Amino acid sequence: MIYRSILLFVAVICMAACQTEKKEINFPKTDLAKAPLIPKPIKTIPTGSAFGLDASTAIYTSTTNPEFEKVGKLLSENIKTKTGLDVAVNASTGEKLERLIYINQSDSIDLESPESYQLYIKKDSILLNAKTAAGAFRGVQTLRQLIPEKSNDTLTDHPLWPIPSGKIMDAPKFGYRGSMLDVARHFFTVEEVKKYIDALAYYKFNTLHLHLSDDQGWRIEIKSWPKLTEVGGVSEVGGGEGGFYTQEQYKDLLAYAAERHITIVPEIDMPGHTNAASLSYPFLHYAGAETPRVRTDMKVGYSSFDAKKDTVYSFLDDVIGEIAAMTPGPYFHIGGDESHVTKKDDYILFVEKVEKIVQKHNKRMIGWDEIAQADIAPSSVVQLWNNAENALNAAENGSKIIISPAKKAYLDMKYDSISEYGLHWAGYIPVDVGYKWNPETYADGLAKENILGIEAPLWSETISNGTELEYLAFPRIIGYAELGWSPSEHLNWDDYKERLAAQVPYLKAMQINYYPSKLVDWKKE
Ligand code: ACM
Image (cartoon, rainbow, N blue to C red; front, side, top):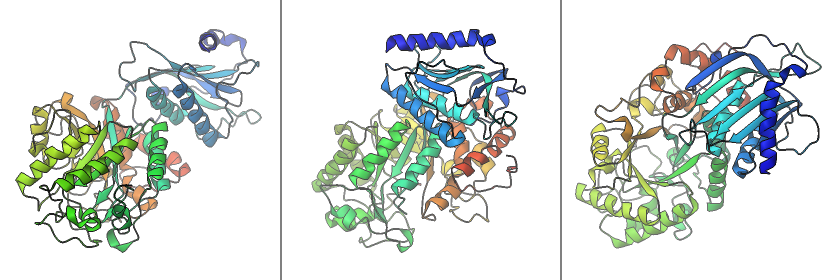
């Protein structure tokens, strides 16, 4: 295997050097630097020619790491979907290789962060170097974006999809680049979530946070406490039937995300936002909270777990334990927001006790910024959505911060006053406002090194299916992809909006329903 890898590597180098032996294909001059890539790579060096992707192209990968082969297979599937070409992966053929894409595990010192990659695109070879399969996967997304929609139709008997040649050196700004989906206010099916994961992967996100419980519904099967879904899972905002993921379905989602190098962060929101749980098991209910009943309205802040009962913590040990055991990622999100009826002392006691349970199950706790009022461990992570002071206090204590300010990054805020869906309590977020801000400087006094990354949450009070989900998420989520990945000094709205307009063929091909904001000239093909 190792010998084959070395031979192929030599073949790539040789093909690059021996181009004169091949039949020359004359493409019009290309400019890799003008390709509408999102997120924009750190460094792009165009060389003016093109790699002709065609039926005689083959993909080879480092075979010492099976994860690289999986990345190659996903690229092959993507090429099939986009062009119809069948491109074999690691085929042991005696035939002469015409054109080669080689996905190589490299220990180059230039590949610093785990998701960094280098692309060398030449006339007859593409070399993708990455240290990890995650890096290779991110590089493959760049390659996908470089494949034209249409083949070069001057060569009808031999269609070629010209990929502009040159060099790309790339790495993410933040190690955490996420979106959140609220599957509690309205339930979304496994297929709807997978479709969202596909689009997140295409734009190099690496995290999907699932908001799995709230007042209106509980969405994940817990074997030791079955009423959570039997009673708490059958309602949602507006009176629909709700729904929940069985553990098998949740594991299927985790596997689908993992194949795309996306980490799932499960959230069980507590001690507030717990009406559905307390309705299922009344011993959880806190005396100061509203009496549990089926809730289909959009009110917040009226429910709470009882922070003083040992039985509440043994219940949570089971719930967190079952979810943690299924979830390979390092995080467990405990919510912690808007517990308005929980006395402050009780709230603090609760967060500190739950943190210990999360740690016992070998996960790092994440919580909305209110959790910084408790004495949390430096390993716990605070998600800034509302109060920057909370984030600053947590950072001072060593915690990392996820930047998700409602007025900049909430995907459920309306675009404008005529938006069909969404809320506007934090303001309108037109497509340009969603893009023109800097997560590194958003919170005054918060140093860059304390920022884990960025997340764009999508709350679902006003949306109940995939089409409506997409209307709010797209195109804004594409901008958050760039805010999370590209160096801040490269970000420019005028340049970005041209590249955004060029996403239309992808969005159409994937049947993604985007909001056609008038701020962008969508007419381009
Ligand atoms: C939140 O929006 N309540 C985190």
